[in-house]
Image (tube, rainbow, N blue to C red):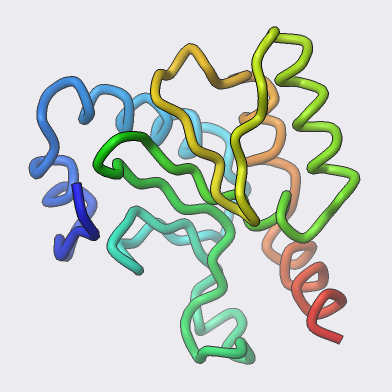
Length: 147
């Protein structure tokens, strides 16, 4: 799937075939069960985005809501954008170790964790990462990294 033009998460999910919808729905549920209060689920950047609302923090470099997580079904894989991992090298190393424990290799760009099947993910580690930073902590992390 190319970048979606869906306006709502429900419309985005409806665009997906059954198999891809199942994977995205499962990861979405893991996120919704673990994400700290204050983040908003929206469609932004052509994907499902979990972000700090502008009403809470508007001082971003691009004047867009500060993205904490993103979730997308790409053409040949899925993407889970973990902005807190991107901003913390120790957290990146920890995630890499969780993959090694699972006998897998981490496939991650700057913030984009790529996977083809749900069983490739260390789901307990992903849940821990999702719940790791409150909105205030993530804003502070962002500001420290921008300084």
